[in-house]
Amino acid sequence: AQTVTQSQPEMSVQEAETVTLSCTYDTSENNYYLFWYKQPPSRQMILVIRQEAYKQQNATENRFSVNFQKAAKSFSLKISDSQLGDTAMYFCGISGGGSQGNLIFGKGTKLSVKP
Amino acid sequence: GAGVSQSPSNKVTEKGKDVELRCDPISGHTALYWYRQSLGQGLEFLIYFQGNSAPDKSGLPSDRFSAERTGGSVSTLTIQRTQQEDSAVYLCASSLGQAVGYTFGSGTRLTVV
Image 1: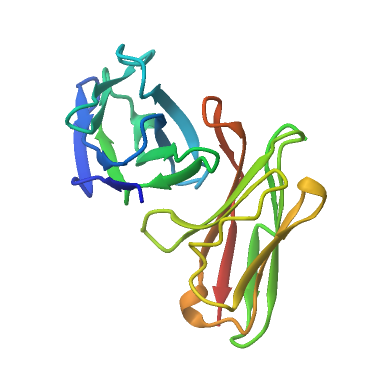
Image 2: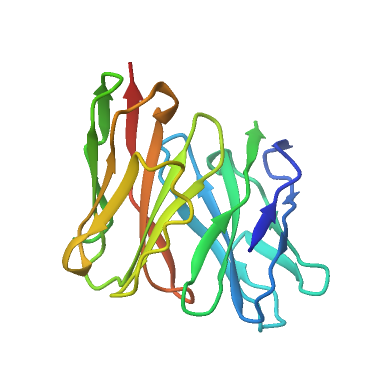
């Protein structure tokens, strides 16, 4: 079974500053994918960034980047130059498991960006 | 359609009634997922369909919950004899594969009174 742990229920950051959201996971699979999704108050889940486990290079999407530590099973999200629109719930997820490809999420981190 | 469509967007039902929630995935997406999100909580996996394979029902919380996917496209999540604890947002997602990612619908907010 795969599990995802997000140890920070809530975080806040000042506009334009940098914040890092933590995520650890457990899996027995060798091939898997990791995701960060954002859920603003509109409740629409939006893909922020994804990482393939067999790739060493950390994924980057504009102001969003990850620190993927495979041995430690850690997958943190760094948001640079935080903007008010980044205020949302952030969910870390893992998919894998051979043909199943199930997607399991952590409990989420509520991020507030303050002006 | 361009995205994952869920209907209705909101549903209020009386305790004990049955409800059906619909998910119309992106055309061609072989995988379809249902999740439940209680107020302020994370996404609880319910059920997963992949092509013609038997669905993974391991997340269904009780035998009052069931889901079907007809013709590899539209899916219906049915909750029988609804209880107040069933009140939540029910999210559907579809995917072409893990490497591509998952696209979510806007969800159905179910309120059981």
